[in-house]
Length: 246
Image 1 (tube, rainbow, N blue to C red):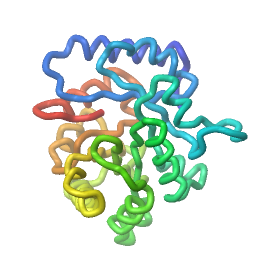
Image 2: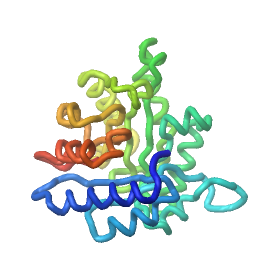
Image 3: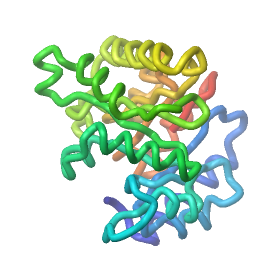
């Protein structure tokens, strides 16, 4: 819940200029502005390598759900992705795994790629329940039919979001390794290439190290994406020497 039209258009324009000036950038870039900024941002990024996504969608395609937005509406607005199950949606709106799963399935029906978010609280990690929590959320939040071509999963430890704290690289490796194994077991070998993102206080100083971790395919970037000066170094880190995602 950040930004008004002028700032969003200026930020999007800066990213388009930076992407256009970059040679050999191997990174897919997605921006997910608030719903009222989707159309002005789309106007700026049209024709560039930057994709557009929504921050949330409703599980139903339409009806009496004042204040919500459907996956089909996002598709109509030019989106190709939508975030579902972000920890702030789970915490602020009480969204359960089943609700997140229904939203992801709705995204599939509308032709959008859902970015399904999972992650433990600080209390769960302190209690040694981090991996079990992520396993349960992953198993119950990702719908049937998910695969590398239509789904992205993001691990975002709740206690790391906006705090400046991050898990150790080994902790990230452990969680992403478990997620990869569970996805391959459920959906088959194709899921070995399903993109797994890390989110939680990603910044220019740690992005390169995080991207070097096995099974980390990119980042779900929050506060550091609000300024081109902090977001673009992260894009470069994710795109250096491979096919990253930001």
